[in-house]
Length: 513
Image 1: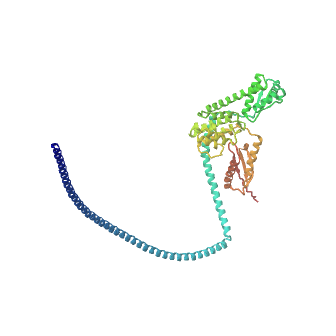
Image 2: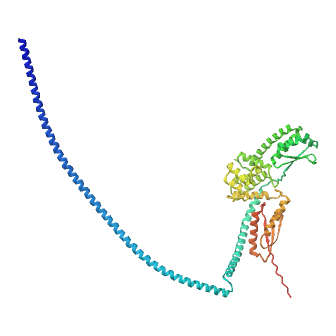
Image 3: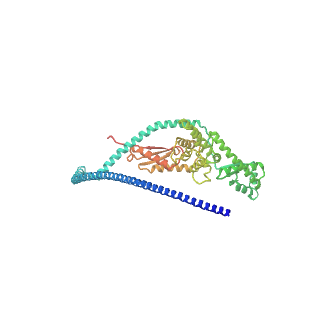
């Protein structure tokens, strides 16, 4: 019983405690809710106040911004209006100026029209007066206007012709007095310092035999030996009645030299048969190649020119076997190099470059029978290929007058080439070539008006021309000699120079009775 009571008491206490707790919590929660509601109302009131204040501030700012924008718009509008007013005033002023100009132009056009009309009237009057004047002049002179023009032109032409002839004669004589003297001094000095042999060669080679029996051995059984030798060398062997000699004839001098060396070796060896011939020809070819290189190097060393490309050295050596009018091409090139160097020393230009240009001026002749084209073009192409200087290339191109010389060295090489070719004994010409040149000289002179007779003398170095005195006066003689010399230069090729001598003779005969 007591236990139940205790339990009941405890239960009641617990329930009471729980009720008290619930009440306390409820009261607390109600207080908190009340406080929260108050705080919420305060926050809402504050928010409303802030919102109201923000609203008023925003309205103020919007009013200020709109006012500012309005002021700016009004200012901009005023400026635009002022600018438009300025433009309007400028347009009005331009219109006024244009109106003034238009009025001035109209006035000017009117005055021009009046002047034009006046000028037309004056022109008509002048034409009438001119025609009357011409008629009066024709009546007084007895000549038409065309006849008068022809007369005046002829008179002026004769005067100018005479004055030109006198001036040309004076200038030429003055230039010759000064230039010829200097040029002759330089040339004579160079020629005196250059001592060169007179070298003239032919197109055949002669091989001496120990006896006439050797001819049969060279021919061989059924001609096999001679055919083999001719086939291997490309040279014709002429075996005739000439005692103890065989003649080698061929276009290519190098092949002719190979054949000569091979034949001499075969004669010394004594064993002559096709196999031995082939062996000796190969040896001779190697010897000739070595000889070509050595000759090229020797020529460059003799002249004192260094740094030439090895291929050009070989081509120089090949020129030993090349002739021109019987003159050895390599000897001629060496001589031209020496002369060009001496002339360069006389006038004070680069001596080494002049020698180099002189040595290489005919380099194209070494292969002109193998390559198509003139030796001038071939030589220029070779010099360009092996990086020679522009001065040397121009000297090669201009030494026969094909192109204009661009330096003094080119002129010196041209002069040295002429000296070397024109000196006595350097070249030999056939009789046909000689007579043809004389005929060409006389034909050129006879083709000019007023020429009576012409005579080529001094082996073609001078031509004397007799003119008709009634057709050619003293002044025209100067021009005639000049024209003939220019045509000779243009149509003929010749070493040195040709003197043109024009002779006019007038005779007056009368009788005393």
